[in-house]
Image (cartoon, rainbow, N blue to C red; front, top):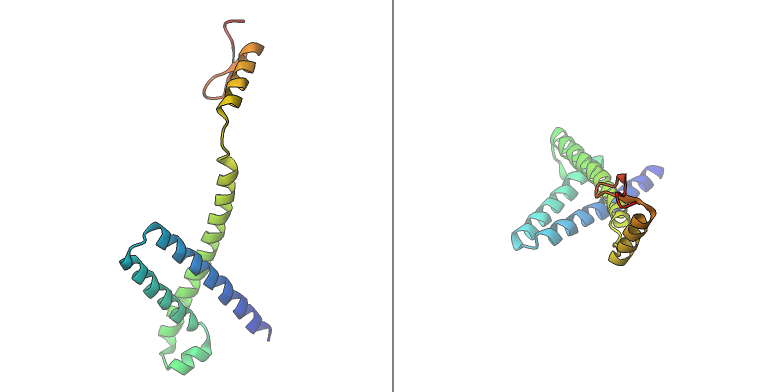
Length: 133
């Protein structure tokens, strides 16, 4: 029974990942041809992934070698896609933190304070002595 639980978890995770990929692609290119292409690709992935189960291969009477190659290919794709989506999510969180809005008034106040202290920053962030002091 433990194998069925792992299979179900993987199916749910892979379905969510493929749904996310499909939604990202369709958001980037909302054309009818892209929509049909993604639908065909998703169906191909579902059918190929079903070949990783021996019951599906026996029921469909597909040659074992071809079914195993298709199943392995879809499994490799889904595992890679899962890793890429996780990485995309992490980088999106980091980008959100780094792209904080800057306040021009705060920046002017910081520059004024640097000038008044005698240590101004060049544009590249290196401190230099202010020639006025």
